[in-house]
Length: 65
Image 1 (tube, rainbow, N blue to C red):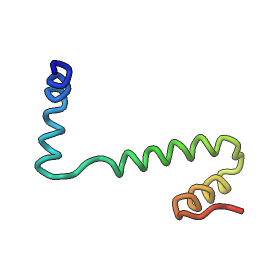
Image 2 (cartoon, one colour; image 1 turned 90 degrees about the vertical axis):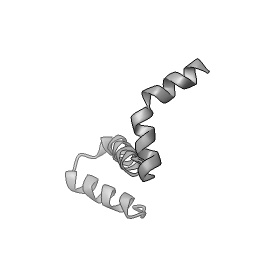
Image 3 (spheres, rainbow, N blue to C red; image 1 turned 45 degrees about the vertical axis):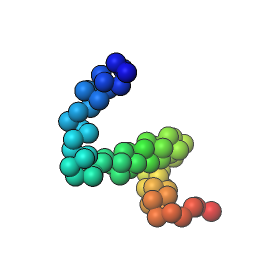
């Protein structure tokens, strides 16, 4: 119970904003995760143009052959 109270107290401002607006940062977090994953995948790319095409294909929902 004390742990829950401390967590709620620490996150009070964020919780109140969510209750008031019903908005979260989920989309930006998802975009950041996608960018990080693409960066990990692209480690082997030496040509920036190929890496850029990979990003564009991935974000468009397509897969390269």
